[in-house]
Image (cartoon, rainbow, N blue to C red; front, top):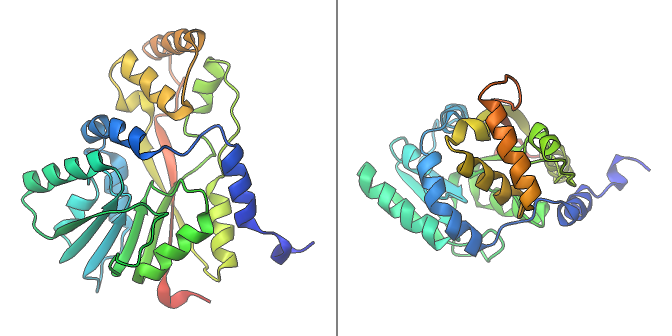
Length: 266
């Protein structure tokens, strides 16, 4: 067997299906939206991502999985036109509120999922999918992003195969089956004839994001779908230990920023 015999998208799809980290549906994202609106507006991740985007000679951007618009609104001041795509009603409602607060008028929202037909989705110079590529079929989704981009594509994907810090999992004696890591995304792109660039971004760890034990526990449970009462008690004890001990949880999570220029496709 050689490299070309390996179907990396098939490997991705099988691992995604078996992973402990299941894809959230629209109902779950609607419920999650208000808390996201409070914690994602100010983030080191947002600043690091925006600093990596090359906006030169670009007039438009399509933000796929825009959520409440923490990235979208900031980019609206840098480009003539920004399209904001999401399938969560509540996310788009909060996006509308954030657009009004910012006083920008060059954002057009689009209610779509990445699995739906994109025939009516406009093309843009840049297509961005920030932390929104937890999809069943990675190759099909990447093809959609690439087709809608005139010049450049940027996606960010979690590094490490887990949405929960390994130290947290160890503290609650929880075994998980990891989701596909970003390296599979790179291999899928290579099979599509795309030599992508990779950089790394930081985002705050859960301990940095939440200032209450209850919020911390809810956040972990969101990622793992459910926790037993025993696991919640262990997680509470773990959180209490963070106040007195160093190094129980990493301060940052890391995301791979994967990008390519349309004119560099093989």
